[in-house]
Length: 307
Image (cartoon, rainbow, N blue to C red; front, side, top):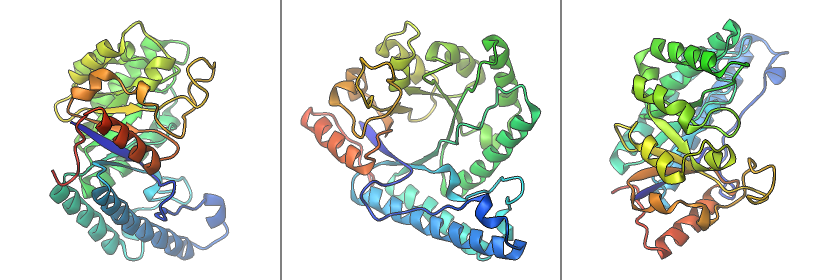
């Protein structure tokens, strides 16, 4: 059965996460900065509960938590530890309530950090910033029970084998709370399923197969072949991604996402699998509602939360 996943935010529902910028905070004293950040983090923790409740009511079995649920957490000047925030105990308590809610209702949660997280980088400052961000997201993942922190392989830097070797080294050095959740995803510019599969197999790291990226950056594998290779890397329910191109497949810029998913883009081979499919469509919950109806009309089983 297919567990459909909602990514980070809502299109129509009045469920809104808050954020801020370092520029906004720069002219304030540290106590005032922490007060504002604490209010935002508390609001976002409560909003996460609201988002998960929406998923339960509307038959959505997976929710991707946005990376900046704690905004500016690892920023060089505005960054902070949760324990520095007013009401931090309340924030952690709400996260743990989310974990229990997810467990009781069979709702999966995942993270997909921003593109600036690059473990293949040759630059030490980029690597250290990436590791700090992964550590923060792993902390929140532990609180809420998320089982995936999904990243891309990053840049090629003129030498793909060398970049992959750096990536492999850093993956091997990750602490367990990150390593146990980390996954790699093929992208639409540099790294294909073929590029990542051997590394994932050797390190026992799951491969998140993005079929849209694969269609934009082909490696000679069919969708069926890429699906089969990716499935073999998972020791729990596999997680895949799907989106449709904004301007269609005959446009040179096929990378841009459409508001909705074309049912013809949903691979036939996926329809009989027990997998999570996160819907990377601009219309968010509206796109999931439409796709769920179309899949159901085709007789595809949908894994609902609570089951």
